[in-house]
Each structure stands twice: as C-alpha cells, then as structure tokens.
Image (cartoon, rainbow, N blue to C red; front, side, top):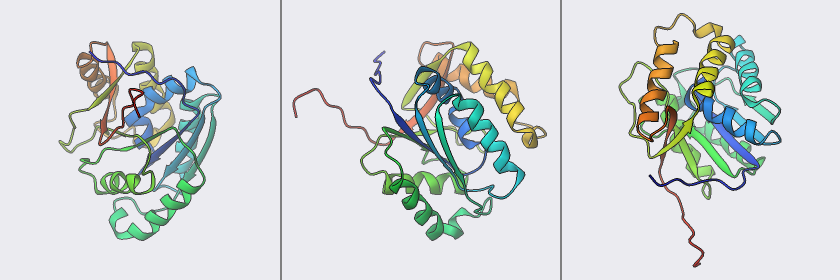
Length: 216
C-alpha cells in the first residue's frame, strides 16, 4: 500500500452542483482536513439552490463540517437538472470564482458521474484550475455510476458516523429520499475502507497528478 501525505494545505476549493453534493461526496474528508488545520481557508462554489431554503441548509452544513476554518460560500441559482443549458453562465461563474481563490487542492464531482449537472461541473473544473490537483468525489445516488476510485482517504469510524449525523441534521429537505440514510452512506464508506485496509474511507477519482522526486 503506497501512502502519500500532504505536508501543508492552507486553502482548498470545493465545487458542487447542488446543495449537499459536497457534504455527501467528501464530508468526512472535509471534517478531517479542517480539524487538522483549523485555520484552513475553504472556498466553496455551488451551482444550484441560490435564493431558496436549500442555500441556507448548505451554509449551515458547510459551517458545521468546516468548524473554525475560514469559509467563503457562494450558491448560484442555476436551475436543478438544467446545467448544460446554462453552460456559458457556469463557465463565467467558475472563471470568476477561480480568479478570487488560490487553492492548494481542488475538490469537484468526478467526471464519470451520470448526473448531467455533476458531469458538466467536473468537465469544466480543469479548464479553470489547470495547474491544480483535482480530486473528484463520488455522490451515492440512484444511478449505477459508482466509480473505481484512484485515491482513497481513510477516515475513522467516529468521523464516518459524524458525517452521517451532520447530513441528517443539516439537510432535513432530503430526509424523505430512499437513499438518504445511514446504511447507504456508511455502506459505501465501509467498502472504500476495505479497499485501503481501513475501517472506513472516502474515494476520489484523479485524472492527472505530477510527482516530484526532486530531480527537476
């Protein structure tokens, strides 16, 4: 098992198509990073939900997941399920967001996601964050698009369960969805844990990375 460790991360950019995507896809990782680095800068952009109660859910959720980190969240009002029809607006918003951040690491949906909104954001992210490592998180849902992760982040049982507790606490609007439950979220996390010899983990897809052995 080859393990890569980050030496220092001061700022991260997190991108989501909908309110709750970020927390579902990388909530335990967000808890881990912000607890280890309480002064971390978290810059978040979400495409849909602006001007609705969902935006308030998202703010409350990310504040809960990020603890004392310096959080800056922007929630746009792109219609849910219609992102491809708003390509130009999303591209412009992403460019504006990129101009105001300086992340060490970027998180976005994974490119093979079957949901058109997630997939579009995943495809546009590297056009703006051209020199960054982008980790694509997976969003458990109805479609059978669960990826084979390239990167696995082990998390403790405590953090895995805390993620689930926060999801239910912060997103009451999603409570009636048949997949929004503890068994589903912990089940996927347990599978990812098995794949990296840990109890639980979150998985990420990685298109490209540069490795430096000091010879450049």
